[in-house]
Picture 1 (cartoon, rainbow, N blue to C red):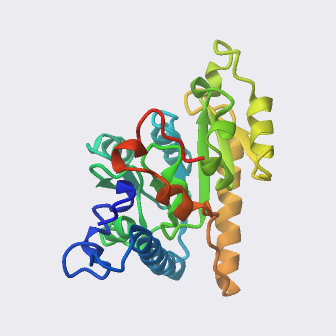
Picture 2: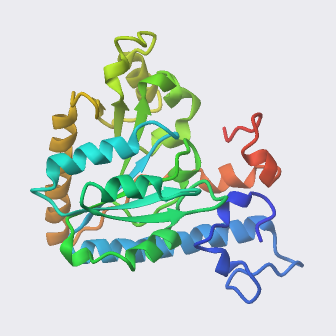
Amino acid sequence: MCDTCGCNVTPGNKHLVEANGKLAWVGKGKTAVDVLQGLLSENDHQAMHNRQHFDKHQVLAINLMSSPGAGKTALLEATIEALQDRYRIAVIEGDLETENDAKRIRAKGVTAIQITTGTACHLDAHMVHDALHNLDLSKLDIVFIENVGNLVCPASFDLGHHRNVTLLSVPEGDDKPAKYPVMFRAADLMLLTKTDLLAVLDDFKPEKAEQYLRNLASEAPVMQVSSRSGEGMQDWLDWLDQELATHRARIQNGEIVRPAIQSDGIRLHATANSPTQHHGPTHRHE
C-alpha cells in the first residue's frame, strides 16, 4: 500500500495494491511515490474509459464539489424539480457512510446510486465506474456526481466527468478560495449557495469571494443561488442548458473535453507525513 498518504487507496482501487494486484507493494526498489504515481495513472486511465461511456450516449457528467453542508444535495433537489420534465437525470452520491442523500434524491423520482467510501475522503474513477454499472446511460441526459464533502482531495482526481462545479456557502465565509485554492482552481463554475442567509450573515461579501477566486487566475463564472428561495436558480439552469448543448456539439465534432484537474495532485498527496496527519488540524496541503 501507499505508505505516504492513506487517502489515495480507496475501496475502488485497492485491488491494484493488494497482493497480486497490478501495483502491489514489492518492498525493495519501489517507493511510495512510485505506487502513488501508479494509482493516479490507473485512475486517469479509468477516467478516460468512464468518459467514453458518457460520450457514447451524449451524457453530460458534472462533478459537484464543496465542503460538507454547503448545500449540494439541496441544489440537486431544486435542480431536479426544475428540469425533470426536460432532461433525464441521475445522480451518483459520494459519502463516507449512509444513503441519506441518495434517499433524498430518489424521493424526487430519479435514480441515485450511493457510493460509501468508508475512510476515503474523495471519489475516484474506479468507484464511479462501479456505479455506472447500475445506470442505463442510454436513457439519461445529465449525470451529477455529488462528491464527498471535502475542499481539497476531490479536485485531484479525474472521475471521467466533463465539468467541475464548486459550491461555497454563505455560512462558510468568503475567504475559502484563498484558504483552499486547490479546490477553487479546478472549478469551471463557482456557485455561492445559501444566499438567502446574506441578510443575516452580512460579514460574507460575495464580491470578496469572487476576488479571492480571481486572485487564483480563475476565469470561472460566479453565480449566487439559493435552493430555498429560488434566487439565482435560473442562471444555474441556463448554464446547464448551455453546457449540455455545447457538450453535444463537441461530441458531434469528435472532440473530447477533460475537466480541470488540480495539477499538483502528486505533490500534494506525496508530501503528507502520515495518514493520521493528512486530516489532522495542523496539516496543510499548501
